[in-house]
Image 1 (cartoon, rainbow, N blue to C red):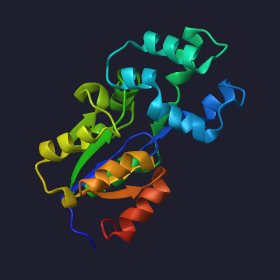
Image 2 (image 1 turned 135 degrees about the vertical axis):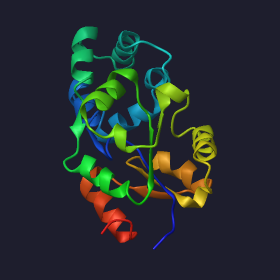
Image 3 (image 1 turned 90 degrees about the horizontal axis):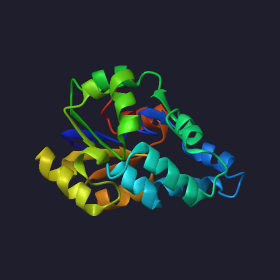
Image 4 (image 1 turned 180 degrees about the horizontal axis):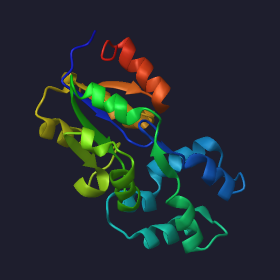
Length: 202
């Protein structure tokens, strides 16, 4: 069993149901495959601007429509986009409450005001975290190496005592390089299985 002080979670895809992949495949009528759609959220300049709080939701929507060459208007895109975050996975609030009795809990998430405000208001998870590092609030996003250094400093613990759970391998590699313990988990079943395997959950 590994010794850690902090359990650090991504939100979308790990704790929260977020599917931006299937809708992009559908909106592009298959011009993007699932891997290309997944990578859009990591590499798009417009996603980066939105996740860093540098543009409005409408500016992001217009930019994404142009970048993806979509046949849809801005309001229709926004209506779909805001629904792609649809709730915490079943049992996640209770899981966080259990883990919080043994560990410090924090979140490192690429996020934006439109989705984050919905998560904070309605999903019953943010109150379980001692610290939340949301990209649009801290002005840095994964997988920029600077964000991992910033989080390590702010948490005030040795890197090896941070366990980080994310659903994108690109976001785990820089964390692993600075010494965090990293785990690729997608959805609640993989998360629970990993926590049990590490001895952090009964």
